[in-house]
Image (cartoon, rainbow over all chains, first blue to last red):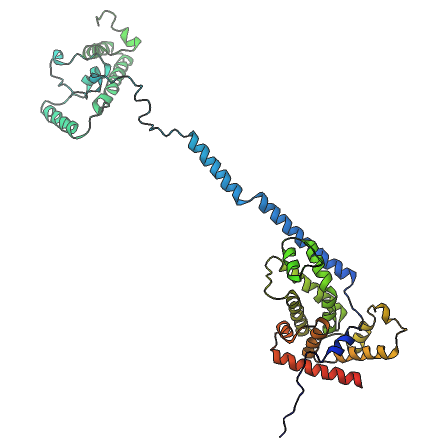
Length: 215
Length: 184
């Protein structure tokens, strides 16, 4: 069997054909096709320019710069002194007597002379704490002391905070007696209140019930 | 940028950067050769127009991501070649040999190709056209890339996706067929 021999293809073998091919009519796309392609290319380039313009306007660097400026302004405007210590040096010295924790409530049975002569209203109102039974008083007093020794002492003690409410309750009770027509009982309660709390400022209408009573 | 002196890859990158004049220079450089390759491959002027525009549309779409890894001409012809193959698969050529011959003959001829030219030259060109039209698709694509764009075997293989030896075989058969038609 004889193999079919084919001449090797030489890239220069077709030089004459390439020359002849160039003599064929030079077909070209029509003007409409040219215009369509150019329009598509121009439209795409315009879209790219719009995108790049927007990117230039909204460059991330602007956001970073704005953040830096804002942070710097906050840094400059912020007072870094400790707010709790601010003004301490300008404050007047603390009165040692006022800063001292309040003492325990005296027993209702104790004579009035034993009570400390404290002109401050809160100290006077402390006497209006609810009356304790005789057997409970020391225990409660001890418990109060124990609590005071355990917990840090605060100027706003619970008993002290409840004193104004107690006086208000008693004044309201006196008014109820007056409204009920029990003037004598109201005057007696008012005298008791005056005696127990001589420094308590009574409302004018109740004060009028005790014109002859020396304060 | 000196548009006329810039190479294709530089022009394409310039267009990707928004330079429309670069695209115009690129288009002016390749429009005729690309169109002839598509027209003589499809043998259908309407289909050639569509594929031609679609080829350039894909070039435009790829403007931003295009990288000069290969010659622009090879890339452009590969796009067109793939579109031609897709068109073949979608539908057979609608134009017959006679219609194709008429379409190609009515295309504008150069000044030196007016009727006063010698009849033998006219007949030779006509035979060349018919011989190319009668080639199988693969051989026609290969010989058109060779004759129209002077592509090497490797470049034709790159465009068509066929092995180099296959391209060489196709060119050999196509050349023999054309020479036989011209000598008849």
